[in-house]
Length: 68
Image (cartoon, rainbow, N blue to C red; front, top):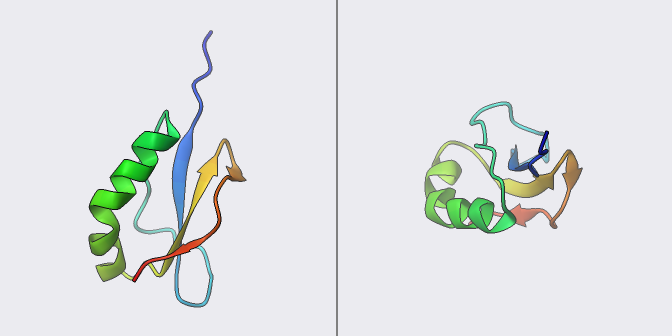
């Protein structure tokens, strides 16, 4: 059985609390996750997402980025 890496975005509100909506897609590469964010950050901000962090297999892999 091949285990594929899982990358996904954690979304936070302005107070730093994790949001349960919207839900991040799961990606198999960091590149795909970052490309997706580059294409969708404006709509995420419109949905109330203030900041994001990339999570790899359950562990935060990047610094928290503020969407502006």
